[in-house]
Length: 172
Image (cartoon, rainbow, N blue to C red; front, side):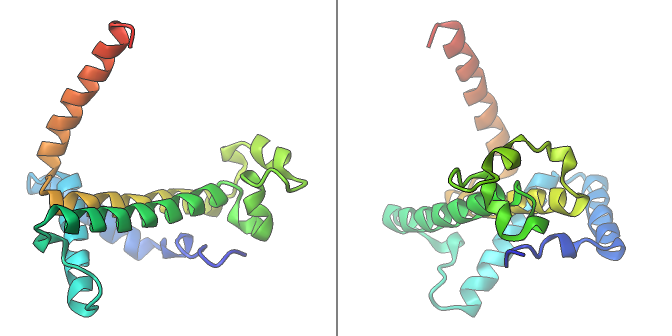
């Protein structure tokens, strides 16, 4: 089995209940769950910068060059997590054959591509979702030095989405 298939093992009743309770607590406190996630990621990144001298603190990046370097590091991590997500779509319980989903030179490539997501084991489906979440960590990390919070992200997304629809109406 591939080495990165460890996320599905994170799910146990105690931790699931703690995560659900944290979600409901955020809602009850009137907090945006996405903002809570961003704050959690900021806390992790700051802690990493304090633990390792080669990890910059994203809350203290000031120059555009520093921000560019940070964004490029996050993009590299996103690319890595995306590749892991692609492989996990092949069913991590299939071991090395999981990569047949994207390796067209493997004999079972067609079979892997035709498999329905619902046919993957619950653990394999969960692994795909965790790989997506891994990528989200680094997207959140890109937001930190820009100072974007959940509200601003929503507003900017809303405006850009409306423009994208308008462009299609204009024959873009």
